[in-house]
Length: 221
Image (cartoon, rainbow, N blue to C red; front, side, top):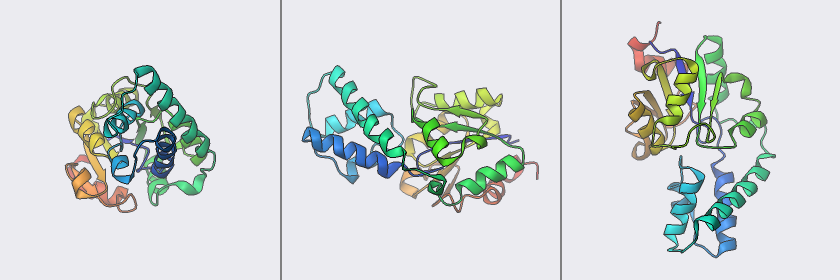
């Protein structure tokens, strides 16, 4: 039976994707590198260091590991500064309602995000109260598509993977959920998250009622 839910953060609870894009764009512009929406799409659900390597490879740039680390840190500084403008109005439609309902119905809830700034984002949203466990980029060493962050969340919740449903908007995230033996809800287009157990275009559609209907026998009622 389903006892817990694990949520990705960006693109599921809130959309910081534009803030990430602007931060990477500024960094790339300063470096004289090409960076656009198409390249940015490849960074979805990917760790910071993997992201900087994707951008470096796209530009055929020769950069030392030390310099890459410095650039990734600089991008993060730009991004974190932009988080100060986030408010509780920045939940994606449907996300706050779902989290509230999960609390009311007694489900356990964990965050499973690659972001090392998750605590800051949740605090800005006023969302910390909805989570029993916060798993982020500081919690595990292997990022998605490895299942480690979701396995960490389940372990902290004292649940087995098959007792949890993962909400994800990234291909790598759905891959991670499947690799870990979790049930998955994909948020977004077919070509990105169509391999999830259930898919919805938006969080607003991915209500608890719809998810319970989709997974039927896995719920008590």
